[in-house]
Image 1 (cartoon, rainbow, N blue to C red):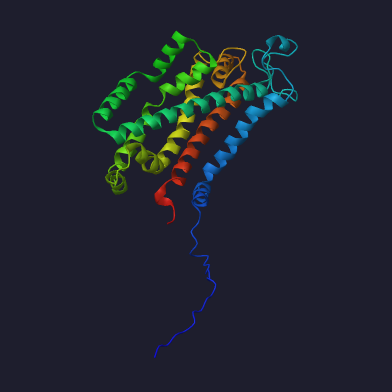
Image 2 (cartoon, rainbow, N blue to C red; image 1 turned 135 degrees about the vertical axis):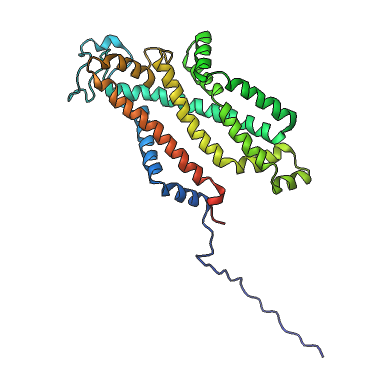
Length: 306
């Protein structure tokens, strides 16, 4: 005797437990970043200053390029209702000049920093993951370049090839990646020895596949951190060149060139040509560094929930 029973067909039941639902990675990273209050304040400040540098010179009436139009303006005038931060030694409004110079400083800094991190990341990953004689040769090249003082190399190249705006971006970008490459190389050396990299190699995966799927994602924390610091270093380098008189050609200007002119007038008591710009410039660099620290924690895999 055979016992049979009709199958019971029922709809699948989905049990949702809020405590078991994993938090999305992007939300975890935002929460980690927001936990650093200084980084949040720095981000707000940097966004406001960057927006002002790109918007204010184009919407506020005034001239920042033709000195002939400043003859009706008192040069080195003290701050007033008409000129909130006074005027500088050429008659330009100091507040508008700060944002006008900031547009060039921020643009050149971001572009040069982007070149720095791209070149340094690719170079460091290739050297660290391939290893062997390739790594040795590539690292000796970096050692040779690091033995040359950075600013001496910049000044030499600019003196030989000129100081056009595109060349300033390129020369700072291609001379500032040596330290970044060594940091990324250290990550690649470590990751290639881990189990999942060795397993992928034993399964026939190519080196480029492992770099793309394993080395790069697991190095993202250091890459993001180095990228933010590279932008700050690029802005500092370009400002240093401007302070030495090797920055952007007139009638354009940058923060370093403005500080050079302001420092020459400081002995005459024209403090408004140095201190406001100096405070904005220092806070921009400090803000980028705080943001970099917070991004390093946000992209750190070990701090994410499983």
